[in-house]
Length: 78
Image (cartoon, rainbow, N blue to C red; front, side, top):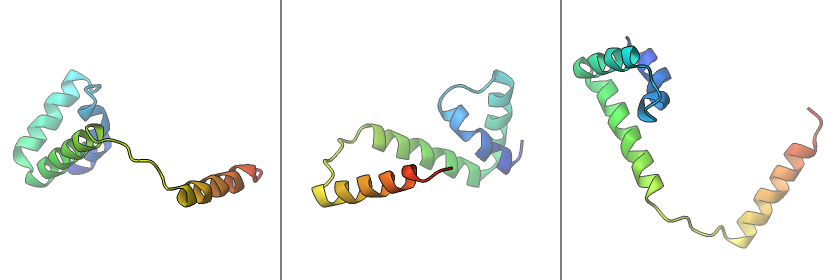
């Protein structure tokens, strides 16, 4: 496995959805590649922080702009 393959498989790996043979290959690569270890660790920590944080209410003006932008985008024919 190379660095590009690690990045492609990252989501499935962190979600525990990767097949056993791919996990072994990915973890072998991680044991030898400092850069990929940093990517995996940083992504894992980011997900953990996000999942453990409280959502904040969106300010009314921001909510209105967002709704208008979504309405404009989705009212256009594909």
